[in-house]
Length: 136
Image (cartoon, rainbow, N blue to C red; front, side, top):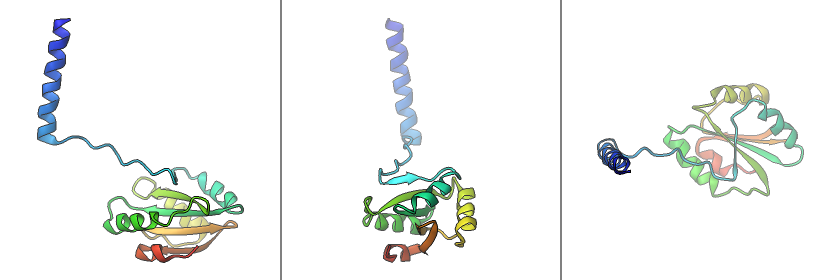
């Protein structure tokens, strides 16, 4: 039993030293509950179908873009889950889905970008800071 305590103590000290040298590893940010993560191509058909019942919004976001980070923070202040379903597309991880959106909905890719879908079609879209002024 003493040997286990000694090993655990050494491991704890080693981890403390590593944390001081390299910093603590941060966990990836959690997606807020009002977002539906768009990470599969099949979801595009679901979005199209559900758009006949409720507005469907796709926010195309680049995690490495300062403008995109600023816009999404501003946009989140106006989210109303009763009004629409909000999809979050991480462009860095799912560029193929972004390309499919451009092709299927006929809207040229931009980043950041917001698409508003109703009755299977994009009824409004905008990019950059104009997103926060987009009426839907």
